[in-house]
Image (cartoon, rainbow, N blue to C red; front, side, top):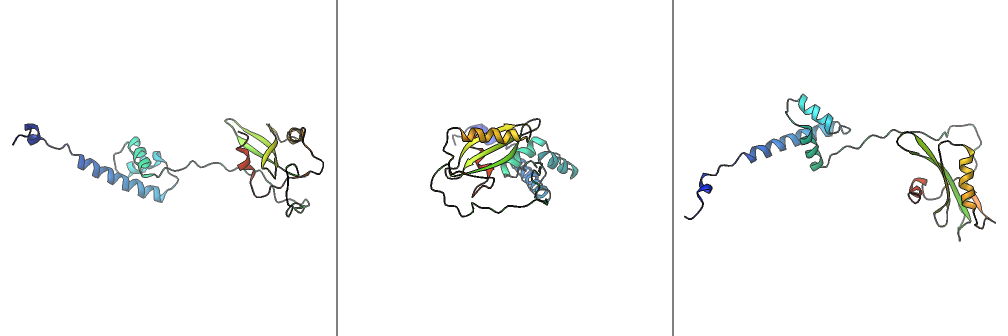
Length: 182
């Protein structure tokens, strides 16, 4: 026959049983992840152990990555705007303004950026025509100096003869523009 003797005596090590067990674990992981979408691999491992399944957290993480059911970290929401006030709300005067050149309309906004230990505030001034950031300042407080520093940077040596300056941003959010700074 001319085949090696080891081929005749070879016995599989049970790879099929191991794959079947992985499929059973994957089914259980999928069921738990469907019921509790915010569970990560640690919680799912604990839930599997409560169901009397002996499984390692590394195995659960590996299967979850393979199945593509990693949960996202829940981020804490911080409300920075108080829209419920008794102050006068002014109309948007630049709503239908046609922009034909840069330095005609600037928009400003202030947002926060979370760093390791706290928040820092970012004041940004954007040219609405070119959508470029013309001035910005970063500070630890919302003092008026933050906005004035951004404005001084924006004015620089630009032509501000018939400039319109507003805090309303047209057709885009400040978050998309922050990327240009960093």
